Image (cartoon, rainbow, N blue to C red; front, side, top):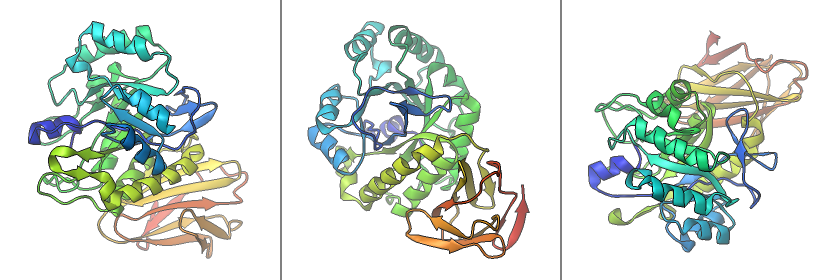
Length: 381
């Protein structure tokens, strides 16, 4: 479901957005050739949560291990600086004149903490036409050509179609915000993957994912495992940034910090920091075999495989591995798997996520996997 504007339509509540990742306080960044932010030559993958509304909020984000704060309040520049974070300021362009937009850009154009200009939030939900978004994009870029521009486009739902291509010329980065948990209408957790693929291919732009860290009114909160599954689906399918909605909704008496999701977000932010140099490397397109979504990367003689079971049923992953790789490290789980008869085999619970480090593959291409089996059934790509 869309982000802030959908909640305005359904419940008349408002929110903001915070981007979180794990980079030090350094000079401003830019987009690299793969569509990822890069700072001082190092990859920067924001991991985000909405509604940072004050200094205390920013410090909580920092203490959780996050690194970018986003807000609709211009105090975010000061709060993020005090907390040692980067910032993403939502200028709410749909409610401002060109002159007001220019004043914002001119005031903060040289701020090294600003990772992007966030212009529109779900314009397709609130009737802002692509022509106006393109006009604002040109206005911002003519005054600050270096800083990327990002906007969020709501995915398709039963009441409107896909619109990523309509707004692609209005930004440097496009964000998508699927909120599948308990929304109904047959939408399942793997909708995140579908939205990521649609956004990448329809827009031709780098994609940031905005993921559900709130309960729909009268519904349950996503579980930590569901949120982890959504996050890694987004990463497998090319997310150059990950954001969570939302840090707080006062009207609901909702605080993300008070839920089990907050610790999970902090843990995933640390994992994404470690994975960032791997994720930004070029490699083959992701694969989907049965319910398991797979990303392959290769760095020098080491291969990496990230796999996500996006379904509610258990599954078994089987991957052919060269005999030289006798043991495989399961990252972030403090365990290894032994390759038996040239086959890596692992069991996945519902919505489970795995990241594998596979050594000693010197000389093999990035597309070294020739077949994957799910539940004993061999699938050849």
